[in-house]
Every structure is written in C-alpha cells, then in structure tokens.
Image 1 (cartoon, rainbow, N blue to C red):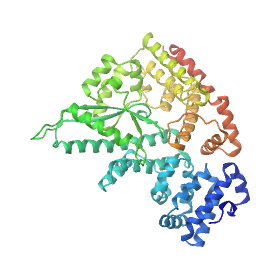
Image 2: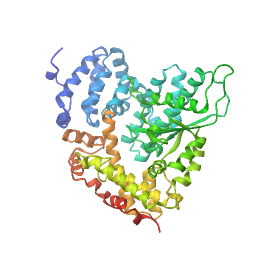
Image 3: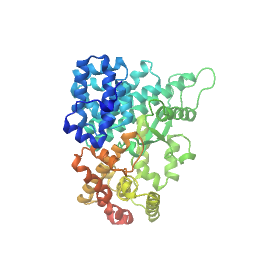
Image 4: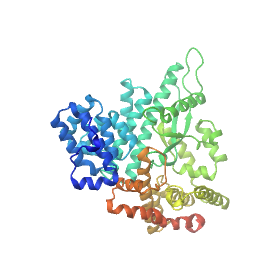
Length: 509
C-alpha cells in the first residue's frame, strides 16, 4: 500500500486551508484508508463517495472524528458496498450522518455499529418528529418480542433515539426545554420497559398468578423529575408501592414489600449496568426516604408518614422537582397529592432558611477547593446549580401561598416567579438566558465522550471544538473563549447569590 501521506486527496484548496487546524494531515491519511477500503465497490462509486465526503467536511464540528468513523464503517466489504450505495442515493442523509459523527463519540460508535441504517432511512418528516416516551416503550417492547436480550434492547433503543435528539438540537435548533424533555423521555420510556420486564420476570420465577391489588411506581427526582435531563445525567429514583400481589396455590409467594424491593433491585442494573453497548443512564437512589439507610422500596402510607414526621427542608426541596415517571403513575400522583401541603408550606422558619444557606455555603466551598470555579459550569459561582438554588428556594418561600409557582422545571419556574411578582422580569430573563447558555455548553461537553463533566476545557483546540459544536463561526471562537475566561456569562448571577444570602427580601409580604 502506498504511503498515504504522499497521496493527493481531492480537497478544494480553501477546504484544505480551513481544515489545517483540525488535523489536515490526519484527514488525508484517513481519506486514503477509506479509498483503500472502497476498492471493492468500483472506481466510479469510490471516487464519487470520496468527492462527496470532501465537500461535507466543513459541516462537522470535528472533521477528523467524522472521517475516522466513516473509515471504521466501511472497514468490511459488505458494509462498505451497502453504505456507499445508500450514501450516493441519499446525499443529504449522508451529510446529516457525517455531521452527527463529529458531535459525540459514543453515538458515533452506535451509528458505526449499525445504527446508521435506521438513521439514514428516516425521512425528513420522520426526523422532525419529537421523541416521546411512547416511542421508546414501543420500540423496547418490539425488540424484546423479537428475542433481543433485555440489556441490549434497552441500550440500542436508547441510542437510536438519542441520535434523533442530537439531530433535533443541533440541526433543527430545538430549544433547550424541548431537548431536555426528549432526553427525559428516553429515561421515562426505558424505565417503563425495565419495570414491566422486571415485574414480569419475578412473577414468572415465583409463579405469582395474575390478580391482587399490588401497585408499584417509580418516582423521578432532580433533572429527570423536572424533565430537564442532560445527555450524561444520573437519574435520581425512589420506588413506592401499595397492596399485595396474588399468591401461588403452592409454595411461598411474596409479600408486597418483598415484591417491590425485588422489582427495584432488578430494574436498576437493567438501566445502570455498563455493557458493550454502554448503559442507559446511571441510577442514584440516595434521595429515597432515609437515604442510603432506607428501604429501596417503601409503601405509600409509610412514605407519606415519613415525610410529614421526619422530612427535612432539603428533602422538601428535592420533592419540588419529583414526579411519577414509570409503573403505576396514578399511585404516584396519589402520593404527591397527599404530600403537597407538606412540600409547599405557607412559611419557612428561620432555622429552615439557615439550613438552606448552610448547604449553599458547603457546595460553594467544595467547588472552590483547588478549582477554577469560572470553568465549572455546574458548581462554580453563577453556575447551573446557583440558578437552580435561587429558583427552588424562591419557590419554597412563596409556593405555599402561590400555587402558580409549583412548577418543576427551572425555566418554567423562573417565568412563573416573574409573572407572580417574586422576581423582576429582567432578573428572570437574565437568569434564564444564562441557564440556557450554560446548559448548551454542558450538553456539548458531555456528548463528546459520554462523560458526566461540567468543566470547560483548558486547551484552545478543545474550546474551538466546543464552539463549533455550538454553531459558532470560526471568527467567533475567540469570543466564546473570552466569555468563559472572563466569566461574563455568569455575571448575571450576582443578583442570584444576593437572593440566597437574603431570601426574605424576595418573599411576598
């Protein structure tokens, strides 16, 4: 094979010049390897494909990663012939695929391993449809009915639709709240399929007959509860049940508490376990009553009694965003109807306000310990958590007397706070703008490697890649870096810190 560094790749001169900072030589090498892999598809088709690839390079935020993914995709003769034929028939579909390959390495791996067939086969109209919980449930059930192993069925379904969400966010410019609602639907749907599977398998193994009055519900907290999940979030869950399952005629069955705990124990690895296809989401159950010491699943009456008798201000804050997300949703709604008077009290005591301020100080101290807090999107001064703290505690302070403030998601709550006179419109708009901007960068960082990271990179090359993922033109990249370095995107949060330090000033009299 000739030295690929000496092979002339037909790139327009302007494109070669623009790609130089992205690793132009590496692209040349990868292109020749692609040419070599396509030797079985015919010279004419091969040249047409490479020419199309060259014209598409600039559209990717990471041309080298996109090309390397294509190189892997065409590595076998069968897939190469099929992929090249489809790409030449559907050049716009190829362009969409190529761009996504440069946004996320985990999703690129999924597309390379076969997900490209479904993605490229979708019409523009199909691609434009929002991702829903029902789609995830139906696809998961369909795969299980086809005999696909449950872990694979859940993970492949997740990645099929996560790819669509990424397309919606970057190509169709869906707003933040629509994107996070779709990511949350990925989790809701997977949890519903996992719940049905776990419950059915346990009942089958223990020969539990149909019937009984047993009900089981999955409760989502945090970002999933508020339907504002990000691509690499943990999902915070608890489990509540009521009633008893029917018992077998022979042998020992299961009590309601035993059945509920077994379902929860079986569900968690279905979502959380890492396989060759990755996981669906990481699961965290520490927000359940009594935290890590508490029972994994708790009865309805016991749960309500726990919060009224022992619930802390911080648990009240956690329940602001919580909702039933899988299983028997009616059971979950019954629980929240009974808890609402406890969550939204008319007044907070001085001790409760001090507890809030103390927790905020602890978070700030941890964030500042040895870190450049202006690069920490979540924990640093004026970061995502600052905005969420301000919003949630203004809801706690005023939600008892103003039901309109009982909104789970941050952006919706900021709007409600302004509409009801708790925040000035300018404050609400500034906080919402900062939140959208920070969450957008967070998405770009987490998608790249599929890691739960909140830190803006230090290197110029990585910052430029993030900027391109955000849609910045090359000449705007320096501006993005300057905004991060100077903390200008967070200056609007100074009023937010003042709110936390003097919460009474923002309580309606």
